[in-house]
Image (cartoon, rainbow, N blue to C red; front, side, top):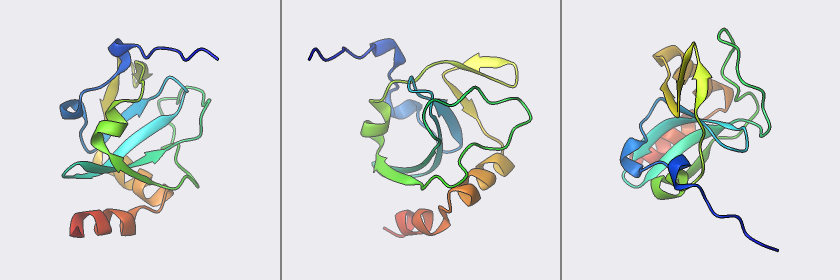
Length: 118
């Protein structure tokens, strides 16, 4: 079976990843970065194959467990530009209330506290 090559235009650099940014993978999965400390981050993943979010929608992380990974691992995934409130980009800054909603939807408070205590 032939392995497909990654498109370097769709990869992020570690320095481009920030807390509160929303990304959309080429597998149509939203990811919100909830916390970063050192080389690790905690993010909320949505289900794969999601339709684009309407402008007035809630964060799409209900019942999705938060995940911890190295920033380099997160950056090496493929992301695509998506429309968010009328702007098209590879990443979008969430408001404080949207980040809080994502944290509560995936129940990440304890995991974020643990990461920050490390």
